[in-house]
Length: 368
Image 1 (spheres, rainbow, N blue to C red):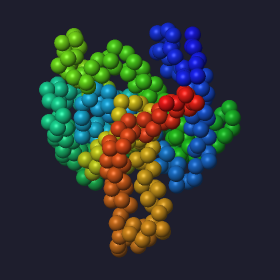
Image 2 (cartoon, one colour; image 1 turned 90 degrees about the horizontal axis):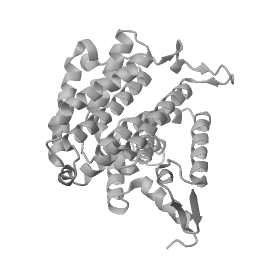
Image 3 (tube, rainbow, N blue to C red; image 1 turned 45 degrees about the vertical axis):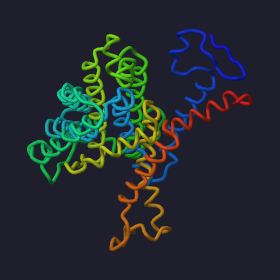
Image 4 (cartoon, one colour; image 1 turned 180 degrees about the vertical axis):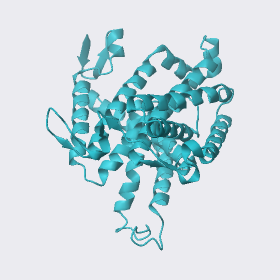
């Protein structure tokens, strides 16, 4: 039962409080977002379709880091190591062993989760800056492994990856929907596949937040000593947070490897980890939707900067790389500026801005 008053929607039962979509406006909003996601790949230009696919893949990895950092409060600068682990696991299983996607994709997540399980007990003894240093050390160790384990990773020259094949068809070659007869190019087909994975994992993460485990994560984030006194197994919960986060990162790394068709050990470095931290901070710490918004924002910045190369003279032209600031450097500067702006003016991130806007109109004209 839902009681609607001028000042908003109130929960009158525990079941309603647990509902993912409370109220008709929330359900209509979910339908509108779903329609937008379905239509987007057909209206987006050729330059934006790959960016959108990268944003979806990054959204999966960002949700994983959100569960670890935003929900459980465990700072990590080694997230890229788990993405790389998933990427190389999938490349070896799908490329060298010829296994299908329904094996190499979950296996990539499980191997990354196993690595997170090994790191978890060590990392859980630390917190704050010390924990960040430990995860950074893990990143450096895994970067060395990626470069030296040539039989699996290809060493410093990298390696080719596997194709994402569904029913014998490589999605990057494009597919035709058998029922509707709609032809999808490679980017569109990959968009819908990754979107399905993102929705499934996002729904799972949203439910984790609302379970006993999610509430244990929150208690550990607020104060682990108090959580321990309350009966929460702090070490086990911190390890579980690393395992779940690493699983999401492994899935994202596998999808990224399949989409790129080639991976290099240098791409799983500190810059990538910082980008994921930027995603969850800019999008809003502690929220699944905020992680996805932040991923879209961060992945869109380089393309937006690239579109301004003809307007801003200090940005290096791709056709004339002799002078100017590169697109990558400008993008990294904007990441940092966005993080500082969010932390100072809106700690809840872009999702917090949406909550403010929604709350204003939900309670209008009694918004005070």
